[in-house]
Image (cartoon, rainbow, N blue to C red; front, top):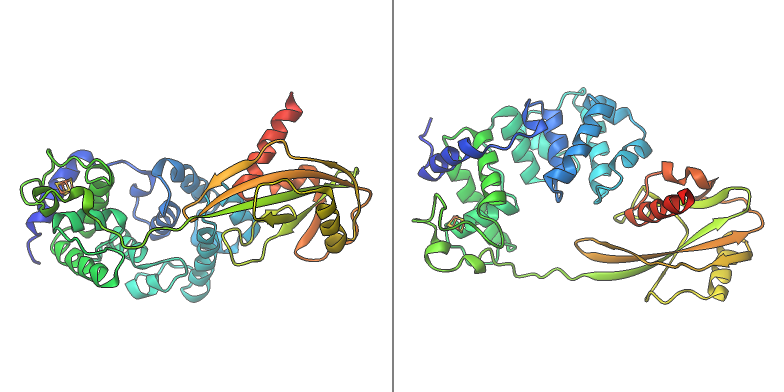
Length: 358
Ligand code: SF4
């Protein structure tokens, strides 16, 4: 067994004093480790922890999760965003049930073959659940290593990523893989932070290339800038006076696939729709005529990594809802909340409920 690198020894000593107690660290069950890793992708620990606890309470084994209806899984995930994670989670649970006899795979390549599991997640599961020597390389680790080694090349280029992966694989050698991986992620999240790293008191202050060459604010360098798209979603809440409304089970392969929402007219701007265009839409899509229309009084905003969404909700009264075909379905207005909905709809429903209570 090789001796741990000096980098790893310093890191593990530092981590002994600061180890964060988190529910999924209590036992190293591979199912719970995988669940926590998927939930925590692009999510803060404080936001993800209640979801982790809800999932473990609802599905105590991976087979329970695999056997659950997709709607239930999506509903439990509601509010966490990036819904492809929930769909992939369910898909992977079925793969484990069907192809691995309900036992979470132990081999790195098998873990990596599960839907929604990339190299980072596979390394995290292999090391945390099975103590295997796979180094995690996530945004935190990329930041720490690129600064430590003074790597000024773009970290979103594959050659640079390959180099960082090779360095990470060397640094973990001889150390306890689970402890090392947890330590370097915690170090990146709490110490070598993106904006104000604690360089002066850092355990690597004397050897860190970025710190010693005044390059900390330049590293990690990214070549691509994220282009944000703004979308204006005009939702129609169609009701018939008998307590019924229309919702849509979204099938498009986008961020809301498998969720439910109202019929929606997506436009170039936030300018409110006129009655005529709503009328044409209703007639051509549902054979319905408007008997009353209430305009939105508020626009709802939701910011995602690649998109900024604005949603407005029109109350459209019709005489009778006619027979609908997929992806649309008629439901009771008061039952809409029981479906898995995008955050714009849940925020709107929350306001509506508060108004009803006044
Ligand atoms: S000296 Fe600063 S930049 Fe370098 S590893 Fe430490 S915290 Fe990060």
